[in-house]
Length: 541
Image (tube, rainbow, N blue to C red):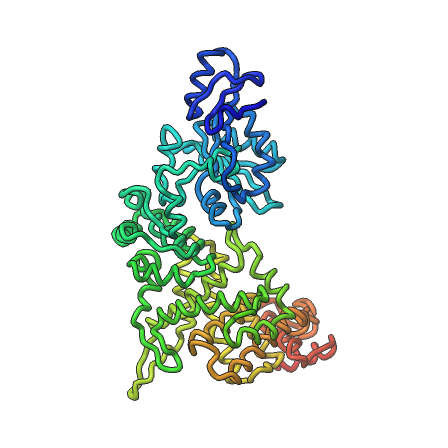
């Protein structure tokens, strides 16, 4: 059907015939109902010709036949439109519609042969999950009476742009709040004066999006962010946690933490981290503890880029050596950091949480000697306890909280190993390293590199840096290529064997001997059942 006479408008169709036309879908429907009151209509937006084609996901093309048969309008909104306009990859799609959004989600899931579920029944929101594509599609009812009300209830102008789902070019964009000019100038601006007061968590979102997009906060938006800081105490812990995890997942987590500090948000989000401000350190540290923590996050991203992505062109001195030294373990490390840990929390998030909290124990353990030297004895153990407590308060699982606490607990271990054994740790030292902190020892390896770079504001002494790299590589080699020999050897004797060989009864002594035996195996001192029996007999005596 030739609908070109109606470009830029909505048409209501019955049996392939136009029965209503309007500048809004409501106008077209009302006219169609007057003309054909008893028949079902479908609504379609007639996109004007020309305009710049938007780089939208191919998935929308698959869904257009489905959308074209609907009797209500559907719009793509929010981050998907914003990112398409910026030429960024679009991973998740948000749709709004006047009514029956949950039903629409399940119908779209059927069309895609995908899974769907109810996200929020009260707000009529459903979600479609495409596991193979790594995408989610959210369908929600308008926030208000119509699309205009929905867009004006959003957080920032750049997120308040809509596109009819059957349109493909910039000429069909709907931008009532001025988001397009703000996208062009790189500004995060509130939709209206009460945007942040109505939902204080938007202050955190403003910081996150400014950092990830490289944008600036508009002056009035920055003032509103500062004013909203105390109100974050009334926001649900889960929402604050989710924003924090999203911040840490960006390419610039250090910028988000620094801006939260500068805008006064940090004491209301992470008071234990905020308390590190002004905690002095002795050389070779050149920053106080909070500034060092922010630097460690910055360097960690660079280490990840070099080691995990192999992107070394233009990297800072020393990172190319790290990429080359650890290249044999790149695939295994990527698997480790990409693993789902709990819910939607993945391994990379735990590494970055470890960097954020690695020195959180220093405030409570700071001491100063008569000659002015500052020490933090036991800050790793104190920090681990603080970390586990804070993360549980943020409603992260015990599994996540305990793992990150292990990263904090172990973050000094590579330095201690260097002082004790140099770049080639013994098999016993490797065993004890992973025995004490488990797989978190892999995270500690990268964190140790970032911590070193933050301490010296770069590589510092090249020989010392290369020695640290060799040590981390040795730890990874043992874990990934000699796991059954040095990290977790299969016991040559079990508890029953021990009790029979030594005439023991069940009890703590059996467990003690088994632990000693496993360490001896890892150290290469025991390699057969006979030598294992001899070892436990000697250990028993």
